[in-house]
Image (cartoon, rainbow, N blue to C red; front, top):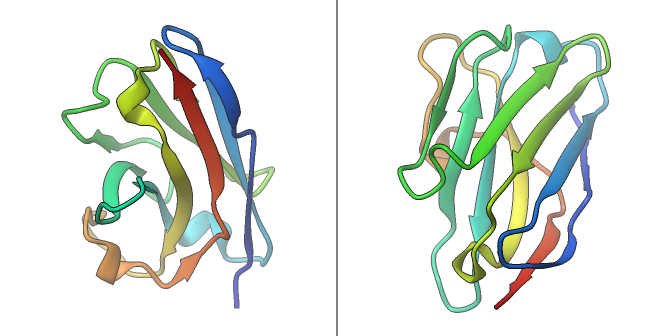
Length: 125
């Protein structure tokens, strides 16, 4: 069993930055791909970014490419999401998730086995 705890959300003005963290319990964190998803009020949960088990490969949604950076520190059992040039449309609850499968990291939420409780990010215009 893996427990994920997000932190770092908050209120920021458009153009600002935030860094989200997701701390994981368990000894097998280094073998998991990790992703960030987000869900805005009245909308479906959507993929934001994913990093493979080693931290060496990343993939982003088009909406955040060039503004967000995902990274994974296996020594600290933590995954990060650095968010720059934030826009009001980035406002959502952000969730981290862990995928036990081997192979190409997935952008589908259905492939993820463990989820955090979420952290609110609000970007004011």
